[in-house]
Length: 66
Image 1 (cartoon, rainbow, N blue to C red):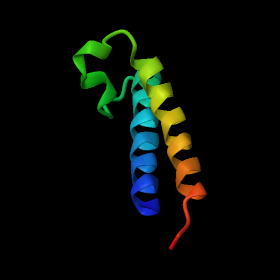
Image 2: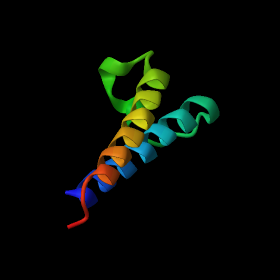
Image 3: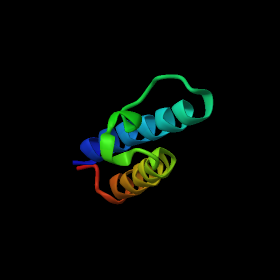
Image 4: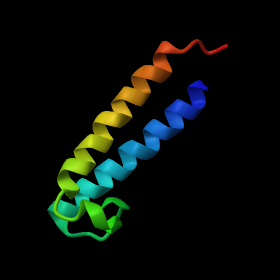
């Protein structure tokens, strides 16, 4: 379970960072800008993904490794 939470946190962190990278550099990376209902809210969604990633990392740390 701990590894799953870490994997999901890593994916959320990468997608949030890629979304911010897309917004500020106009590179076409990440999935956030491809979701239609988030149109105009990509920065907020990317920041929410980064916050979610840190929450998943904290949850993974609170789990026992065994």
